[in-house]
Image (cartoon, rainbow, N blue to C red; front, side, top):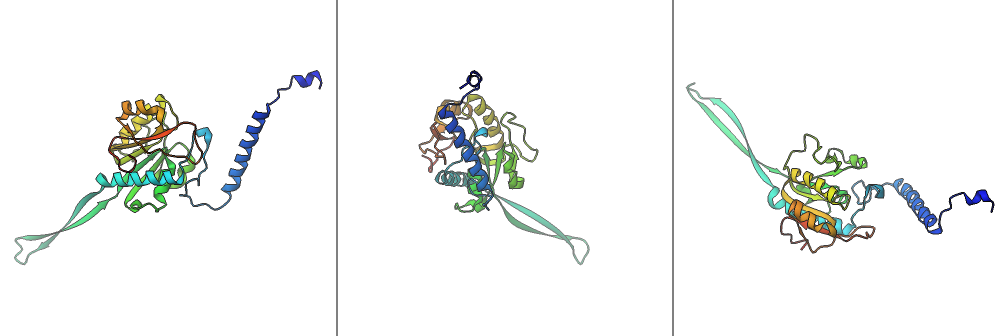
Amino acid sequence: MSDSDDDVPQLSAATLAALQEFYAEERGGLVQNTAPVDKFSVGAVEEDWRMSQFWYNDATATRLAEEVIQEAGKGGRLVFFFCNVFTLPLPAGQHVAVVAFYIPYLLHSRIACLSAPSVYQKLKQGVVEGSGGVSAVVLEYDRRFATYGQEFVFYDYNEPLSLPEDVAPQSFDIVLADPPYLSEECLTKVAQTVKYLAKGKVLLCTGAIMEEHAEKLLGLKICRYIPKHNKNLANEFRCFTNYPSSLLS
């Protein structure tokens, strides 16, 4: 080997293997994207670790979807009555008759999935009991989820209150949030968004190490249920709520 070769940076065997694995995954993802996929299947949009994206496995996505449906339904369904009034002239011409029709209208419970697209997808699949009686939106930084149309809301946690005008305050029966980063700074900003969106109920999924901050910022208590991801994470994940949960306890 010449002296000039000594000056060329060399990758270790471990680093080279890691790079090869990464590029193999990238190539695999491109191949998978060419096949027809149900746009609401969990994984239809592939994880991007550069945006700290880690999807729940099917069992966890289902359990969390069941949880938000159950809790939203307990306080989210409202019945309105609309009155149509008709005036009819009487033969004497001195009086009018008023006929009112009262029509019951059922408003769907509303669920916000904040940085939790796999739960939104599970809700939209229609396989979870009660999913037809709720409406859901997904708030995400990743614009690939714009394929979900009006149910996609662009969200940057660095601007926690920068939301469209049609996203009204306290307009969701339950908010499920999964902050992208395990830091007090990130959770503090996400908590601002959660407080703006939620009527009351909050379900937070994040690392167990965030327990103290979850209680301080949102008054949440840790649940027994342990959510799982498609790819095992080094950090232990937990669920936190501000209400008693039968499915997660």
